[in-house]
Length: 121
Length: 108
Image (cartoon, rainbow over all chains, first blue to last red; front, side, top):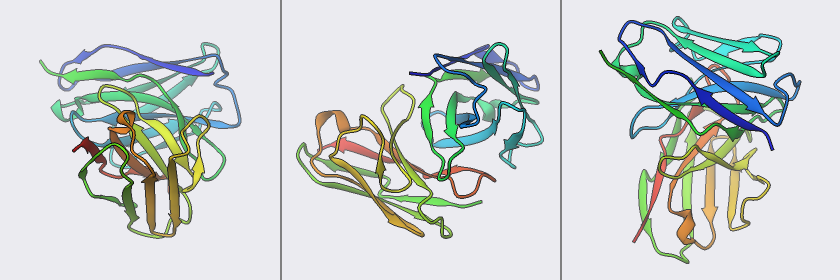
């Protein structure tokens, strides 16, 4: 059973860059069957998809965040990463990594436990 | 963006009740609709994909239906472990993928 685990700083200062990594275990990130996504949830709010990456490096981003987001993949480490630049308090959220199927209709069938990132000076 | 609207936003129900949650898309999304359950401080869990397909390991009291713009998640007999927040999500358009606002199911 594949497992995903987020890691990274829990506190980021305003205007800085948020950086998180998702480690994939018990399964290969280099699969034609999956995209690898980042999703966030503001405190007490709903879910917002940030973007995803294919193991080849192809990416899709939420247009609302596209100017500040970068997702990359390291197949040798079986990891993918999120960078969100110029953060403000509005970026305070729980950040999840998740696996999305490439088959259509696609769906998120495996999620990390989530990591809270607080933006504060 | 495809907007997903869930109703109600919250409901109170008793163990054994039949519960229905609806999700409406702002445009037709065929059957590209998924349902998730989220408990406090936990990641969402996939229940239903492609509108009506039950994810492996999910109890059969959960079912999904619908196509086009209107979808339903039904819990046939509510169990204590089902008290949670439920989200729908469309995968018809990845620009961007979007979720409904959630329905919180509480104990009456």
